[in-house]
Every structure is written in structure tokens, then in C-alpha cells.
Length: 169
Image (tube, rainbow, N blue to C red; front, side):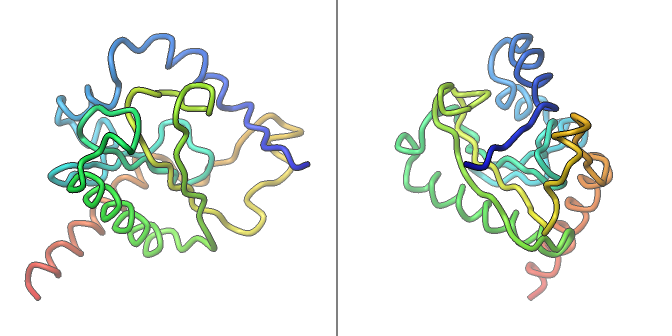
């Protein structure tokens, strides 16, 4: 059996979750400080945000704006918007990072691994051949090749460029 060792995530699990009062995602939306909060895209019903403790470079969360814990609680319009945004986000990552593949998924409920079980979110994690190596296991270190701020700037700039091009077509 293969195991995913992620010791760098212990800080996220033990510190961030324990200190957060209320929903961190709802707070981000209300603040409207997208650069500070690393929000990449907002739509009418959904948004994307870079994961603060990524498994890999480009690890993004795609979320509905409304605070719901399970996708069965989404309206049809929210569901459509969420998955359109997931597709847009993947296209952006394709263009900027050019990964060889992706892990895409949801953890529903704390026992399933959801760090924030009250607010549904879809993980999209770019993958490259050889991106899991000895570093996390031997050195208890995960190598992320780009700062979150740099990646945020590249993604938002590309998204704005594509939006302008689409509106002029």
C-alpha cells in the first residue's frame, strides 16, 4: 500500500484550524482583500483561493460563496458555477504551470480529512512526474518551487488577460 506522508501539514492541522473563529473562507469573501487572501477568481456564486499550505505548487481551492458543507446542498446554479470555475481554474493552471496531471477532489466531513468541514471546497492539485520524492519522507520538508504571492500574480494577470480577450471576441 502506498502512503501519502505530509508532515509539513501538521502546522495547518494543529495551529490554523484551532485558532480560526468562524469560517475562514467566509471571512476572506467579506474582506474583499483578494491579493492579501490569495483569492484568484471570483464569480457570481463561487471563488478560487490558493491553498496556504499546499501539497504542491499551484494547489488551489474552488469554493461556493455560500457556506454549505456538502455538494448536495448546492443549488443547480451554484453547482454549475462551481464546476465551470473548476474548469476555468484548471485551464489557467494548464497555461501557467503546464502540469502533467491533476488530483481533483473533496473531503466531506472532518473524518474524511476536511480541515474546514463547514464550507465545501474542491482541491485542484497540479502534478508533475517525480514531484513526490525523498524530501518529505527523509527531510520532513516539502519543496514548493514558487511563492504563493508570485503564483497569485501570474494567475490573476492571466485570468484578466483571458477575460479581456473573451469580451472583445
